[in-house]
Structures are given as structure tokens and as C-alpha cells.
Length: 171
Ligand SMILES: Cc1cc2nc3c(=O)[nH]c(=O)nc-3n(C[C@H](O)[C@H](O)[C@H](O)COP(=O)(O)O)c2cc1C
Image 1 (cartoon, helix red, strand yellow):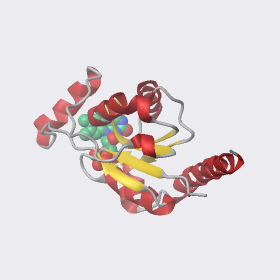
Image 2: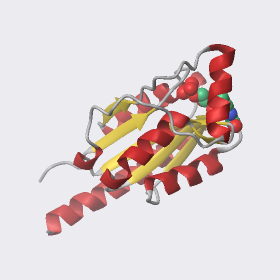
Image 3: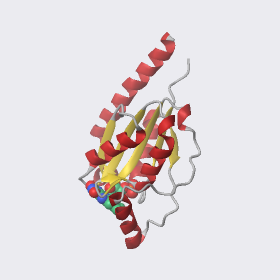
Image 4: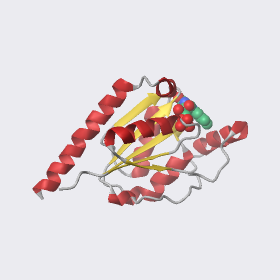
């Protein structure tokens, strides 16, 4: 009987969501896919582009994914919150892959406000309710003190993974 397969997919403009994704990947022995987009998002103009994409709910033009999400039991998708919404590259990824997800979980990093709106949008884009979701403030990720919320998130995910394994065994 094989172990459930977990894929972590994320976008990160300044490295915070990448740090969280790396920690989660280690905890869950997951494969990792970083979403890359073709837009210049550095500097003041880049920041403005992110905000406008969020206001317009515009998906970014992204590099095609390397890993096929349909080969995974669980896909965890991570985003920074942009203007109270999911980031444009993650919006594009979810739209492009929505037919390929078996189970999804969501995580986000943020300054403080807008996680629930981002999660609601991710759920609509993925066409699936997440098995778990987790928001972590950027300051906590950077100081390495997000332990309690991450432990809860990982614990919940591990329970789901054990359940998938039991179902596979029963079939
Ligand atoms: C364009 C833009 C808009 C943002 N809007 C919000 C917001 O609405 N609420 C919030 O709490 N943080 C907001 N932030 C802060 C980011 O969500 C936060 O710094 C995040 O951890 C950055 O992740 P990254 O380093 O992976 O790109 C915004 C950042 C950017 C660049």
C-alpha cells in the first residue's frame, strides 16, 4: 500500500509564502511546485500591478506547471494575500487545474487582513472545499514563530491523509 501523495503549490513575490511552503513540505514529505508568472512584480510599479490584478480579479499569465496535480491525493495551494484577495498567479493556477484536484488545502501569508476573502475565492476557483486552511502573518513566518497554527494545520492534514490511506486499504 503506497503513502498518500501530497503536492504543495505556491506563489511568492518576496519569499514569505515560499518559507512557509518549505516548512510545510518538510513536515508532510511533499513535492513542491513554485508558480512563476511572466509579469514584472518588483518595485512600486510591480506592486501596483498586483493591486490592479486583484481588484480586477485578473488571472496572471503563468509558466505551465511542471507537476501534474491529478497524480496527488492532496494538493496544498499557498498564496500571499493581495488587496484582500488571492494573488493573480495562484488565481491562474487554480483556474487552469480545477478539474485535476482530488482534495485541496489552502494556506496564505498576509500582513493582517483579508485571509477569509482570499480563501473564499480560492474555494470558488478550485471548485472544491478545502480539507483545511491556514493563515499566517508575514511577521510570524519571518520570525519563525508560527508554530502553533502550523501544528494545528499539519495535524488536521495528517488525519485526512490517514483517512485516505484507510480508504485505499479498504478498496
Ligand atoms: C500588492 C500587495 C497587496 C497586499 N495586500 C494585503 C492585504 O490586503 N492584506 C494583508 O494583510 N496583507 C497584504 N499584503 C501583504 C502580503 O500579503 C504579505 O506581505 C505576504 O506575506 C507576502 O508574501 P510573499 O513574500 O510570499 O510575496 C499585500 C502585499 C502586496 C504586495
